[in-house]
Length: 156
Ligand code: 4NP
Image (cartoon, rainbow, N blue to C red; front, side, top):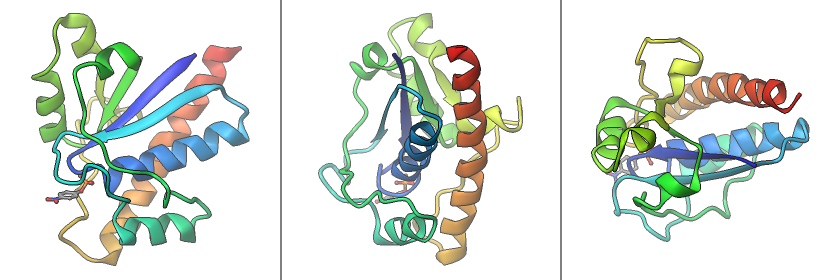
């Protein structure tokens, strides 16, 4: 089974939303993918996603309220085929834990699937306003469309 891990800093804004969006697309396309999310930091271990993210996801018909924060661990390199990160700081943090080239090759900036080689970030919305959360949704929705479509192709 394909397995995908979404990673951001706190695991309460961007990566749980990415997890929820991709899971919803996978269900619609009947894809058998394992999807999870984690944060590079331990600030929000055990916490529900940020309420602003929960409400934004809900507005788009996605329920992420039951997810709980956890921290990325080295074992995740064994558990997941692909590790999508949101920005260059997540990328450096995760890659710094890689044990070998195989681990390192699993790590990708998620927006490179939409804008190849651009190294664009999904901006951290935590300290901003409502529009930042909607912007994150729009970017992650585009990325998850491309990711889900690539899974349909690989299933055929
Ligand atoms: P996330 O956003 O990485 O998208 O979950 C953040 C959440 C919490 C903090 C920073 C970013 N924080 O500093 O607590």
